[in-house]
Length: 190
Image (tube, rainbow, N blue to C red; front, side, top):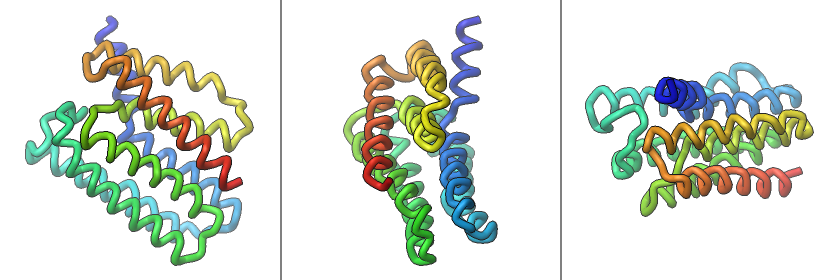
């Protein structure tokens, strides 16, 4: 039963789904400033759909072993491609003068760069990091009404360790890093 529970948590609270959710939250925040849906659709395509297609192609062509990309070296091409896509979305946002959305996406981009750099030498938990980012963003946008989401973060951390994908050090460092970068980043843009 624990094995099923850990797998379910890892799949439902997976960065593959949550990165687009974080972008959607930023977009929802930006909609309050009157951004057009056409721009937002392009942004989501560049920042979420294209990297997902690349991931699925790599998985299908066996360039990555499994969905969790357990081998750190196999993560690097996907992360690099995703960084390039996110940079494209960030550039588009800046060039089109989307002043409310740009700093939020810049904080997300900084998170991605930091995790990428760490991944070059050390295996860190993106599941824990992305969940920490998402839950911190939700709480910062909505006045810490959803602090209980951090309970889900603990479940994600437990699941990743239980499945032997990460150590406790890797999940804790991923979570703390995500919270720290978003907390500092968002407090400087407000």
